[in-house]
Length: 162
Image (cartoon, rainbow, N blue to C red; front, side, top):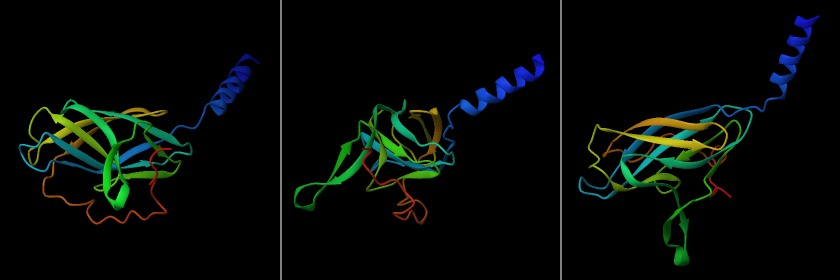
C-alpha cells in the first residue's frame, strides 16, 4: 500500500511540473569589423524543441566589458538604428530565434582582446526558464551570413521582445 501511494504521489508530482524549454544552439559565429575594433557581435540560431515558451533575458561574456541583446529598428526617414533590447527576446515553444546580421544579435562592447580569425568567444545566454546556456562561439571574420540557411518569416521570432 505504501509503495503504491509513493508511486502515485511521484507520478502526480511529475505531471504537475511545468514543461521546460529544450534549448539548442546552432550556426554560431562572432565577428568584428577589424582587428582593432572596440566592439563585435555574435550571431546564432536558438532552437526551443520543448512544449513551453521561454524568453532570452540576458547575455554575458568575459570577451567584452559590456554584452547586450540588440536588434535593428527602422527609424525616421527609413534609417536603421541598432537598439539594446532590455526585455530580451521571446522564444516560442517549438520555435526559434535567428540572431543574424541586420537583426537580433549579441553585441560585445569594449572587447577585452581583438577578435581573431579561428579564436572562440564564450557567451552565456540566460533564459527565464531554462537558465544559463554557455556557448563557445567561433570567430569567423569572413562570414557574411548563416551559411545560406533559409530563416523564413513564418519560422522565426522577429519581434523586439515585447
